[in-house]
Image 1: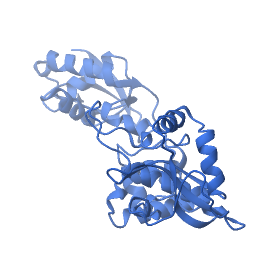
Image 2: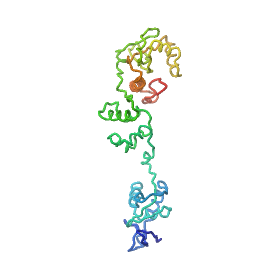
Image 3: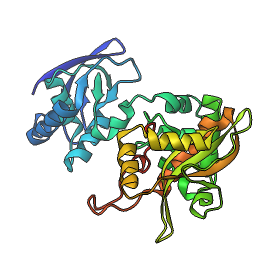
Image 4: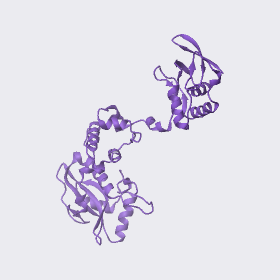
Amino acid sequence: MQETKRTTNKTKYSRVILEDGFGFRKYGVDYKSAPSPTQVDDCTQWLLTYAKKTRRPEGKRLNSYYLKHVVERAVGHYISNGALIQAAIALGFECSLIDGPNGLFHIDLRLPEDDWKRVKPTGFSKFLFKHDHSQLARHSKIDPTWPRQAKRFIDFWRYLGCDGGFGGTDDELCEAWESWTGKMPPRPDLIKTRVVYKRECDFINYGDRYPVADEGGTYLYALVDIDEEYDLIRVRYVGQTVSPSKRLTEHIKRPGSIDRVKWIGQMLCQDKYPQMAIIRRGVALSEAGILEKAAIYAFQSCETHWDDKLNGFPPLDDALLNIDK
């Protein structure tokens, strides 16, 4: 049995590693109580996989009794305190203090279940975690699946299931987002999608004349593909414009993205043109960007359909042909 010397309160003790719930002991050394070689091997393999050497201040060092319980959960059977201590010392982990039978080690754990803690929060999440006075902030900070590096409002909105209309959470999120950005959040429920699908708004055909928006205002619109046979409306693009007639002509003559070129080209081959649905009139220019994003998010949810090739639903971001998603 290897004898190990450690210092506690400036007094030197000769302590020996024992099993059966013990670790370091000053008296009553029983060499028959040496740690189980099998348990020591289990601890050694676990420490090699999940532990790293580090320097920890007093009060932050890891207790061997805590560590032995962590190993037990991993390997599925009993591990003695002594086995953990012997394995750790043999691997060169420094035990700078002794607390009764337990060793206090300079060890940093890298457990798979703790990977989320090492994901650095950015943007909104960083702001939220620093201002954890709200219930949302406190819960999100300890949530291992929280999208800590997401950049868009919609990522947090969908993560919290706000599309389902659960009360409270959506308001908390929006209040926090407005505090962070100083702007109104682009929440999808600001947009009434039914005005398009129920034909409760103006529809413009190619060549139609439509009034230009008043000064300081603009229109929120959607480009739609209408199946007259089945009376089905599919929204393909969302935008804003002060001159709907001119903008519709520009879309048809200069579609822009490759996906829009393919879509409009296919319609033209069928002697059809996309139509423009006016989602909202008189939108203040100061709010147009926010409401445009809100409309994109709202119609993405409406336009996501089952895909037999995927045997599932495609990503919501692929539902519309907007470049800036």
